[in-house]
Length: 265
Image (cartoon, rainbow, N blue to C red; front, side, top):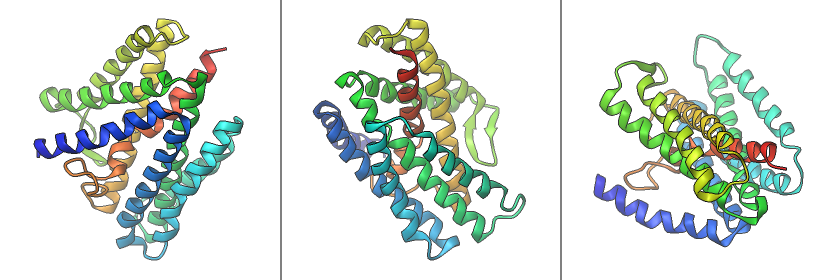
C-alpha cells in the first residue's frame, strides 16, 4: 500500500506543482477539474440513500468553482455565496434532529457539494495575489503539516477520541499536534517565503488555517460516515478519492485568502 501511495504522489505532485508555477489560469483549470471529480464522488456516495439528485449534486461543485473563481478574481462579494450554502447546511442539519432520512441526506449532499466548490475556488484568486505562488504554497504546506502531524501523533499517542460518532480514528492528541504544527509552519513560512506580514501574524494564519483543516477533515468524515463508505472514491490509488485529498485543503485555501487580504495593505 505504501508503494502505491508513493507512486500516486509521484504522478500527482508534478501536476499540482506545474499548475502552481504556470499561474492563476492553470490553477483555476486544475480546481475546476478537481471539483468535477469531487462532485461525482459526492453524488456516488449519496446515491444509495438519495436516488435521483445525484446528477444535480455532481454539477454543483463545478458550477460553484467556476462562479467562485470568477467572483474571486473580479470582486470580493464572496459572502453571498457563503451565506447561501451556510443556510443550506443549517437547514440540512436541522431538518430532522434524530433520524437520517432521504430528505436530510439530500440536503447534506447538496451542502457538501457547494461547500467544497466554494472553498476550493479560493485557490485561483489566492494564486493571483501579487502574482506570486507564496500564499498558495503557504496554504498547501500548512495543511500538509497539520494533516501529517495529526495522523502520526494521533496514531502514536492518541487515546482521547475527538468526535467518535463522526470519525472514530481521530483523537484530541492528533488534532492538537496538527494545530500546533500548523501554527509553527505558518510562522516558519512567513520567514522562509518572505510573506509581507509579521511573524506573529504568520503564526496566526497558521493557527486559523490548521483549525480550518481539521474541521474540513471532520466534515468530510461525517458525510462519509453518513453514506457508510470508508473513502470517497478510488481514482487516486492508495489515497482514495479527490474529496479525500481536498477535504482539509479546501477550507485552508479560503482562510489563507481572506487572512492575506485582511493582513496585507
